[in-house]
Image 1 (tube, one colour):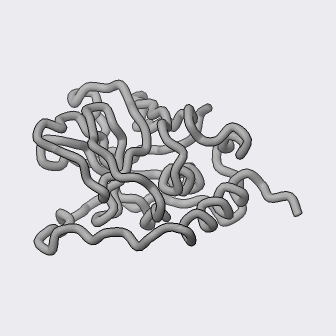
Image 2 (cartoon, rainbow, N blue to C red):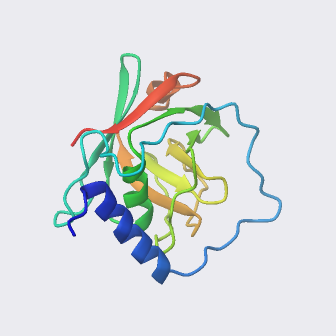
Length: 180
């Protein structure tokens, strides 16, 4: 049986997730902020993602994902092949709303948690797009001073935009799709 690219990616992610270990839990005092984000829309199961994902032979490293709000856009280059990145790419296209969080990052909540078991934690840097496991959100880090390694912060990719450029996305409907 030949699987479509999204179905093959999902099958690989499920197989890898089954081999992983249970994720750690975050600090008991951590709770997500109140959210007014508009949930995104996920594609119909089995429907191809916009632009498609790279073939399994090539992996997902180097895939470009574009976040667009009106005439503004930020491209994120996927830097790792992990269960979290494959599941994120399999969700696309979708619509999110970004908001400011803690003077460090712009965040957006996904319509569902990413399958992430087996994905490595990270020591985020400015310009990283991350997935924060306890809250199920994406984060565009622009101020990582004092932020260290965490098993709960998963690196998805990198982008090149200033905090001011990211601020143009706040409170606006943002489409997310694969472009390369």
